[in-house]
Image 1: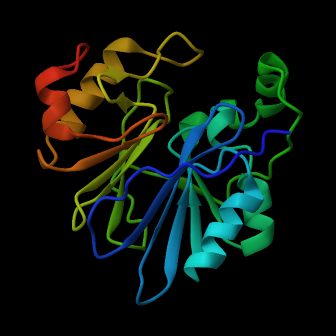
Image 2: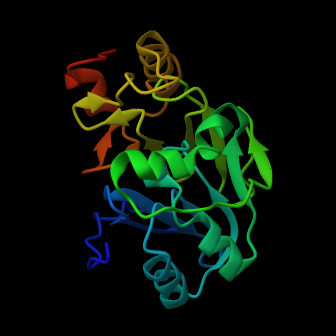
Length: 222
């Protein structure tokens, strides 16, 4: 019902393979980041279009070692079960967002999206969690949701920020569990301390950089 052609964002220059493209009913940015040598890869925020995601993995000849989520709003999680079934890779989520994960059917009803049933996550993400692939580490950045988590790849200077930080904006905090003071603190104290020239892959829309947001974000400046 929601199939669409891939419209990929330009990939940052890095030794790793990085593909970002919108998926699902609300066009969440799904990112695949993989090691061209080991062929290990992470799938971040599989919000829909499972066959599209699997097709990109096959094209790149990558093996998924983890399915990781920036948070548990429906548009970032809908294809997680299908990707897990197809690849055998474990699902990761911050425990503080389990109340959202467990209410995915209610979220679907709220947005008029066909009902989805998801398996429980295999593991919980923690702050500074080593992702075991491409040098990635998890950063707990609550505010959009209690369990919102960003993924930092220091060697490549890539930050996958989910719905915490956008180009010129920040994530909404008026949904259940949202907290404006927390998201501002997460951005200022955790994300803005990263490399200024780091590429920020956002949860929706175009990528940006840390320095650009520090200088011009109308909600949170350095």
